[in-house]
Length: 249
Length: 386
Image 1 (cartoon, rainbow over the protein chains, first blue to last red):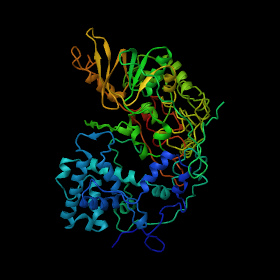
Image 2: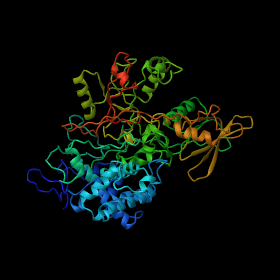
Image 3: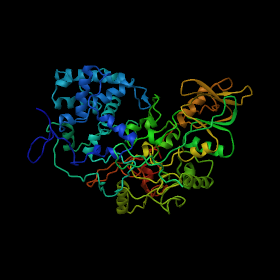
Image 4: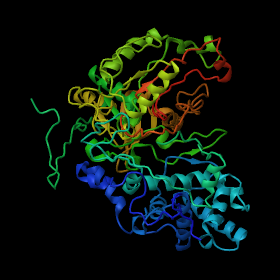
């Protein structure tokens, strides 16, 4: 069964949305003519159709795709409106774009991804007797959640050589950074987007700019078998991996 | 008199579009290789940028070496977090130990202006008591100077950057600010409302080194929220737009893309100059009577270590063996909260409201037992780069 968020009143799954989130009709890209040229080029470059995958092998790209689909789920989005995560991670690794540091107990980012993806796939094989991409979403989440919790289940020798929480943090940061730098994600969270040179003018009380949209909440429930949903129901707060980073940059 | 915002340029599709708002003149002067200059400064960031301006104004021949680019804010900077990655020192550094410090975007900058290009421009002063923390709290060390020694320099820089904030800042040595406070953004509003309910005093709208009114050729803040990604507006103070232009106007030679590799000494043990690698990867040399190293707490010791030579086998300025030790970045506690109402925290400067009600040590309070930390800045839920 495909795990989907659902409408708690009707029980109907929430899927195939042009734009999820509480800001219907808010489209940052429609404002692009009001942005400065450098910003416009930077943002529009993310909305190109197909980007090459040059660092990951075809199999690694499929595994990474399955993982990204759990870390930043897009099941409620229409197929054509899903934000590509894997090609952007691939680009960073292919071009060796670094964040200025590496922990001494970690291999280079590229090697970490090779090792990590292989380990995750082998964990899936060992626990559920199938490759990760063939597992149900619930099974995939069980494997990934064990990494998130710093207690790989089943154990794998890679995590004896590479600290699992550091790998997890790097992968999570890559996925989240890429997702939320895409203008479709800005539409989803109601972010007004770049505002140079025209300025933001309504600063207090969450008021919208003329081009922003008021929040219109709707009820939704997590997929029935989602582990993060179960966590919230059991009042276990999500753990934050700080790992030396002072919050969002 | 030219218009405040400079020339207007229409975008291709004829939509209304302002800008570029301001331009910084690129370096012009270049001393010849055979010339001996008075000073060579390594790193044109928060400190080096001010120093080069002072020395140039005083009439010295001064060269500034900067590893990163000389930014063109209109071309190089964007209203976008991920697109601003190049502002940071991204060269690979290996970190370790018991409590490894994440680098990159967390602290150092690369390019003229250095970290001041991506700081939050939050400018509270130290309290007089901060200079006596060992005497008063039994932690750290007392400063060899007092707040009162430093006060004239606070006042000077608050005018030069300049700083916007409340007319009356009630904590420490009470003081005002040259420019008026900024309007309250959603995030500051939440802080002020919450503190008021709890009887905690707050100030709002600063102190920040961000213009609340235009200043010379610099326009005021437009509240677009990307202070930490380089202020494209030119409202936030960075030495790139405050002191470096004045340094250039007074004959300083700023060399971008110039990575210092070694300080060399003469036979008599005095400094000879600085070797550096230029943009094309060629080795160059600046002959100087004095060298000032201002490359942050990582690149500065690295250069001094790399300059080890006979008589200084442990590196320059390291007879004590202390060089490169006791690295400390800015520490801060982060509190995040969920609110039922919309905040839109992406507008306004990241830090613009605060309370220092819990700043001073109170020997009678349990708070001191619970926490060895002295400073509790209630600013934005995240305010890096103070």
